[in-house]
Amino acid sequence: MKYERTFNFSAGPAMMPEPVLEEIRDEMMNYRGSGMCVMEMSHRSKVFQQIIDEAEKDLRELMGIPDNYKVLFVQGGGTLQFAMVPMNLMKNGKACYVETGSWSKKAIAEAKKFGEVTVIASSKDKNFSYIPDCSDLDIPADADYVYICENETINGTTWQKLPNTKGHVLVSDQSSMFLSKPCNVSDYGLIWAGVQKNVGPAGMSVVIIREDLIREDIDSKVPTYLSYKTHADGASLYNTPNCWAIYCCGKVFKYLKNLGGLSVMDQMNREKAAILYDFLDSSKMFTGSVRKEDRSLMNVPFVTESAEMDAEVVAASKKAGFDNLKGHKSVGGLRASIYNAMPKEGVVALVDFLKKFEAEHSK
Image (tube, rainbow, N blue to C red; front, side):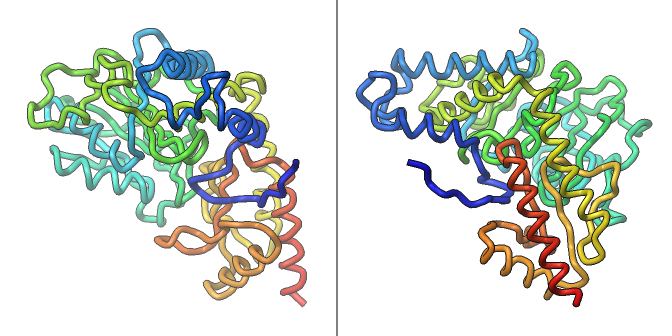
């Protein structure tokens, strides 16, 4: 039976691929002859061990993760990683952050609780509508790492070129662009991503960390669970992990592999985003909020001439069968999140709706 589904433009939790959801549905009551749902089974069982092993293997193949990097499945989302990164990596008590929007701001505020934070570049002067030039940054020699949010979910900017860290460890929050395009993992010391935006259900982050950054000399006051070493030593099974999220993400990893990998996904995402951005660039009513060269392929913020008109668009979009086009409460406006699982026809339908709305309100 085919259920009618809405085009969900939420920034997260977000859409998942329909073939994945159908496979999960079919295995819900009895996973591969186990007689139980994955939500019911022990994380110490052989059947779940196979699930988590396959998930890590497929992710490593998708991203080409080198052998000297650990893959960790950690409970919690980005807010927890804002703290875990400085807790684990601030050996000298100093770190550099690039401020490009709401999520990097939150990461900066959290890191300041654990050490000295230097904001080495910022786009605050233009309301975070661009990515600053980071080709020649003033980075203290004893800085432990340089941190970026590679795709700002709320502000809709993305890095086209990574910063020149001058030999320092690069840490990246990839939450809202994770697995949307190829990634050279060796360029980073640590990559983390909350999975609820572009990969799976809420409640977990994937952490990819170079082995030399996993410290044994971490402050003894750091809670056991908040040490990356704990998760690395326990192969993500130190305690009961988010078994359901690992299972669902594993399904998405296989789906992406069967699709042809991240280069194919990247091409599909570029084609989808171009449809929406081309419309915004030609529209007299709707305006994109981000400098063209820094536009995200995942999160597209835009505005009309007023907050009142923005609200009209949101109300009309819900009646038309679209959902979650309202911009984040901190910035207002409108936003369409068009992650991997958003089909091309969803973006086409959205543009048709916006064209119709503009025509009807321009008379």
